[in-house]
Image (cartoon, rainbow, N blue to C red; front, side, top):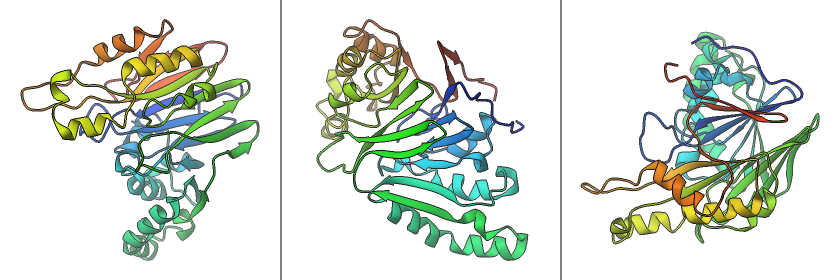
Length: 305
């Protein structure tokens, strides 16, 4: 489909869930990546599998992204970076000609340096053969050892906060984005971290990940280990009940399975969360667009895109 121009007005905070999935291969759900449009900026949070394709489906050229923020370094949040970065440099991706800004907790420099090494030959050849501007591959990296305000321009503010995903999974962050009296919170991957509820208090839109499986699957050690790093639907409902956002959204829903033992249904996951929260809970889908002003308008993804 053709790539369009920015659609967010100066009075709106617009969020598009580019990828809502997990490490499991699912053509309907790329792994996690979220786009935020406000104040004429395009901000990207994580680069999961398929992020570049989803941007194009959303009508955004990858080169339009101003800044990228990583939550943590599990591969399902980073594996799409090379495609996004180098694809945005090509004419078909918008022809990036200025550096990309990338920020995240400690570890982001190593991630970027590794990509530079891995694709040095590709860059060298395309500069010599296609005469593409080398500046379009440059990356300005900001590595943060502490949480706080990472971006603050034209009234648009991005604040990072630490969340608990597991003793060995550090650093691990979430983000709160504020603009024109509107707010969205990306909780990141977490394991029943109640501090997130305070950060997300009264937010317009609050994304929270969950993990769930039938009790019969918990006897398998590999499944138990996965789920011990994630918030149960019931716990998510309790967190939503404290935060009381205008809209609560479940994302990155981890539903492991085994042969002969199917995964729990997404509607059942939501129902379990709703036992503890009486507000609006939706299950985020890839390419779902949230337009936040006095109300939140949800534009369902075009399945034919």
